[in-house]
Amino acid sequence: MKIFRDYHNFYLNFDVLLLADCLERFFKLMKGKFGLDIAHYVSLLLFAEDALYKTTEQEIELFIDDNMYLFCKKANNPQCSNFVPELEEAMKKLYTWLLYIDANTLYTKAIMQSIPTGKHRWIMPDKTPDLFNKITNYILEVDLDYSYKLHKAYTSYPLAPENIKIFKEKMTKNDFEKNMYKLLGNANYRKTVENICKYQRIDFVRPEGESKKFKKLVADLSYKSHRILAENLVGISHHQSKAKLSKSIFISMSVLNE
Image (tube, rainbow, N blue to C red; front, side, top):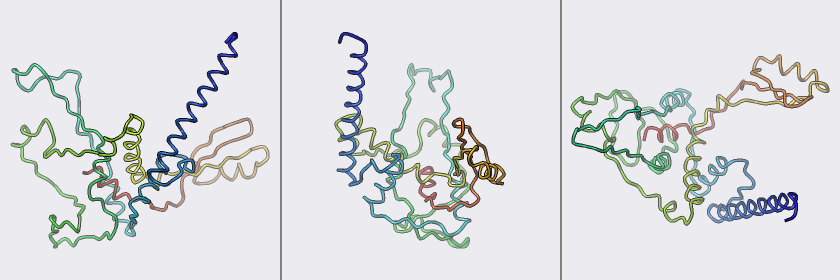
């Protein structure tokens, strides 16, 4: 290498070939595991959703009752149960150390449990559900009285922790594959928690050549905002006038409350 251009060209060639090698390995890995070509997907979320239904062959029955959807949407809020102040003190003066415990793959662990797939129906108020029935699962909204006497005993960790090994993740040979399985598990959850009501429609318009269309879109009652992308190109965002509730929100609710 005599001049900077030689180094520049070598670096670009090396970078492109390295990226191509990684992508080729990634494509072969996904094709071998799930039989799907990831090059046909714009994101890992969409790929993970198709891979889930292809490998499990499980059909999901969506809600046809608005109240059921609203019930799950209300409960579909992650709860924060940890607060770490700047100064920590040991519970007993004899301790000279602090123990911090963290759990990994929480979403993946939860989504591996029994997950609702269909046959949704309300329970009559006068009927007591059989909670120990392994065939039928229940989603309950209850008021709990957690005895004050138990607060101190379980202040350090939740009740009945369970250890589960994710075997494919453990058997991987490198960090890339290990992180990949974790991301796929999280992606399956994220596709069920999407809020379709927040989707937007975006139109790209050239104001100079499409002035009537531009004025019509801006005057629409569903208009939200616009952004100038180029000298003669504008992106106009609109709220949805209708929303098809096609996401299995009851799965994400079950995962969050696991």
